[in-house]
Amino acid sequence: MWDFSQKIDIKLGGKKSLEALSYSGAFDSLAPTRNVAIECVKDMVRDGANRSAKNNLKSGDLFAQVEEDFDPYEKFKDLPKLKLTEKLEFEKKSLGYYLSGHPVLAIENKIKNLRTLAIQQVTNDTQKASLVCLINNVRQIKDRKGQPLIFVNFSDGTGSMDGIISSDVIENCHSVIKEGEIVHLKGLVELDDYRSKELGNTMFRIRIREAKAIDNELIRLIKDVIIDVQKSDATSLEDLSAKLDSINKEFWLDGSCSLNVKVMSEQSEAIIDLGDDYKFSPSLKNLTYLEDIFGKNILEIKK
Image 1 (cartoon, helix red, strand yellow):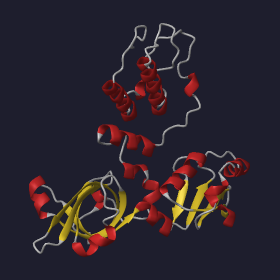
Image 2 (cartoon, one colour):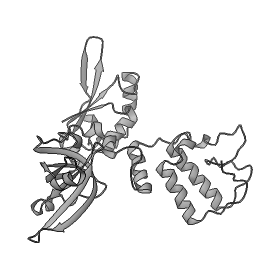
Image 3 (cartoon, rainbow, N blue to C red):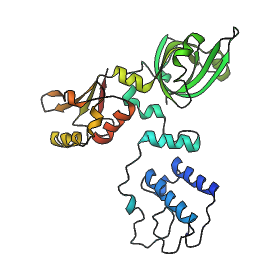
Image 4 (cartoon, rainbow, N blue to C red):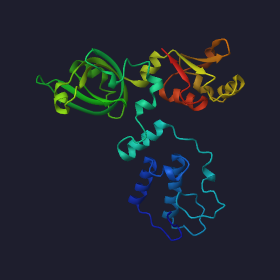
């Protein structure tokens, strides 16, 4: 443990390093959750910068030495937990890569109806593909005729793949083909001879004909979302109703996606349409918000 009994002078570089480490997850094992670790480091940096640390300091930071009966995390008990997507965003920003998983895998239950297959499922028999992927890098050149040509590399947590966007398609999709964006790609699959020879393994690429922002596709395609009461955090229909009432009314002001509830009994199953008062826009943010309220991965999403 670090001893804060002596004065500490935290310079700008050290402050940024500590904050980056907390966002990356380096201190996760020292605190109950990563959001607590982040707040603790903020406390520590502030105390060090103010040169106010003493033997009896009760800042609640990760490393302070405190009395045995003092809980350094008490003031952080009501902090909301970070979602996986938030953790991944912090990791990418601080480390340059994802440590806790892959962003597409983090939203897999929400996008499975948008794609025809995952990258690892592409075979010699695959002619067309509809993929949901994270854009890793983008490179634009000019072909022999002087026309723009874009090469992209993307991944989905099961593998990575290259894509080519020709000049006649670029205008319709250049705004969404950006590094770090999750997009819905459609196109023709072909053998990538160059990478296959380079890696000594059969590799494929896709000639991209369409590229859409993932939120636009979710909002366009998803018509119904079902909450399974048995799988949710709601203990009863009354509890579920109370959770619905806790949602800000503005959530239901925009969108045409219907919210339904699946109720099971010993002998039957019923799907209850909650009606026009509970229609919403099924963006990633809104679907994740519903999961935060009712439980992880409890949504059944219908096209």
